Length: 170
View 1: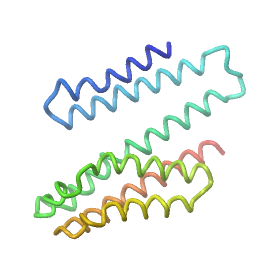
View 2 (view 1 turned 180 degrees about the horizontal axis):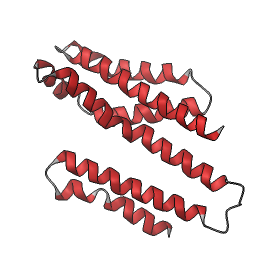
View 3 (view 1 turned 90 degrees about the horizontal axis):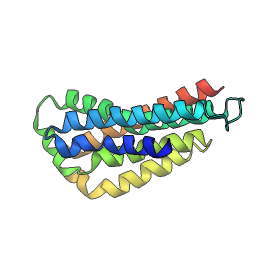
């Protein structure tokens, strides 16, 4: 069953190879990947080797909210940046800040993990690393504004997901 779930998750990457439209490919990949996680979570819930005290449900919930924190914030951040850009010259800053989608996903995952682990100081470490890594690129016109807005939206999303999980677990 685990192999089937892994194959299903890998199938989520196929649209990226088959479709030229990035938006559709990413959306379909996320949906298939989330479907695999939900299927794997459902399987663990009904596996008799797990105890009946809700350990599997708790682990599945943590995994699903962690994935939501890391990858769900990307479309939200992109939507906010699109709204802020208004089709103006700031759009060229997206070319300057390459890798922003993956950096954002890793940033949200790291922030989520530090908050769930009870180490909120880790948030400062993550943001300092991101700022230092992007510092040379922030001198381009519009890049600093885009960086700040995107970072705030991304961080707020990760904090909201951590709060949601902590609320559900308590």
